[in-house]
Length: 312
Image (cartoon, rainbow, N blue to C red; front, side, top):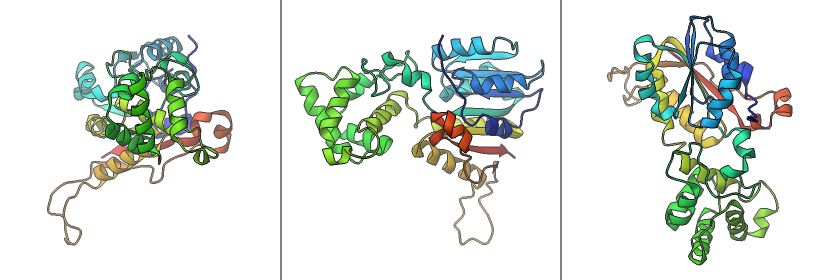
C-alpha cells in the first residue's frame, strides 16, 4: 500500500518521549507508523507499544512497517476513546510512560482523491477519516443552516468571508445538492471577492479545513482526551503532541497551563486555599518547530508545533 507518511519533528518527538526500553508507549495517531517505528526500535522485548488509528488503511500500512516488532498492539479507534482503550489494554493498572499525538492530515489522505478531503482533486464530498462515521462533508454542506456553516467556517477555518461563503452554499444547494469537491470549490470561488483571491492561500483551503474538522470532531474531543491521558501517565511520564493549526495549538497550550497551575484562588490571595496542586510540568515553554533542513524536505512540517508535558 502506498501510504506516504514522513514523520514530522521525529527526533524532537523521540527526545520528548524520553523512552525507557521496558516502558509502555501509546501512539494515539499511528498513521503510517513513522514515529512508532522509531519508538519500537528503542524498546526491549518487555516494552510495549500501542498504536491507535481510526483509519483502517493507516493501520494496515503501519502493520507492514512495524512487522519486525512483536510487542506492538494495534487498535482501530479514535484517541477520543482512550478511556475505553485503556481499560481494554489494562493501562489503568500498569500506567503509561508516554503518549504521542500527531494531530494532522497525512500526505496520504491529502493525495487520496476519493476521500474528498482536499480541494485539489475532484471527488465526492466525504472527508471522513474513519469511514464508519455517519457524518460526512456532504451532509454538512447540504443540510447545515447558514448560521451553522458560518460558525464552522469562521471558527474552525478562521475564514474572514465565512458568512458570505455560507450564504452562497445555501443558495447553490437550493438549485441542486453540492455533491463533489470541485462543485464546492466553485461555490467558494464565487463567494470570495476576486480582490481577496489575488494573494494568500487557495480560496477554498480554510473552508475545506473547517468542514473536515467538523466532520471528524477534531477539536471537541481534544481537551478531554488530553486530560484522560495525563491521568493515565506514570509519575515522570510524558505527553507529546504535534499540532498543525492555531486552534488545536491554543487548546493544547491552555490545557497544559491549566494542568500545571490548576489553582482557582483569586489572584490577590496571598496563599492558595483551594488545595489544587500542579499535575504536570511543562517541558516546552515555547513550542518546538521544524528546523531548516526538515522544512526543505517535508512540507507538512511548516506549520507543525510540538508541546510536551511531564506528569508530576
